[in-house]
Length: 141
Image (cartoon, rainbow, N blue to C red; front, side, top):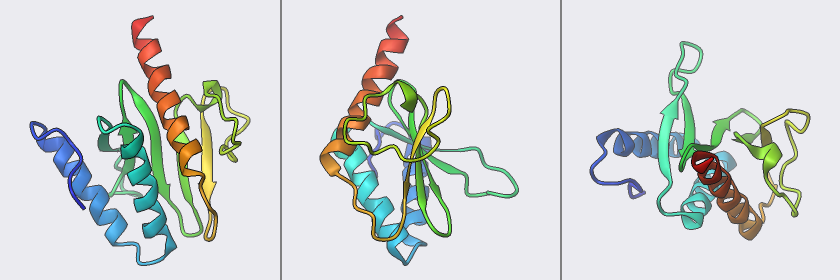
């Protein structure tokens, strides 16, 4: 998979390569689904920045993070699901009802994806674009 970062950023290239490796290491539905979601994120906005954050002894590979004017969402891999957590999800319009987890929080919302689940690509890209607009509006305030 091609790196989707500015050529001037070695750290961004490294993060993209690490996300490539995470996807390649998942031979089941999770790898295929995470790759599809990642592609949708980049289709929504080619200027997305990929990062790896929150490395710790219990998770040395860290967490995949997609940002634009701030964190948009994180991608976590679990044994039975993928979890995309939107940092400011509670403030985002979700007319398609994609958010199905972390619904009680004041700020975050998440999408838990299990084997066989289908994601509405158009609605997902709209959610990414809404998160970008929210981040941009917050920076202007």
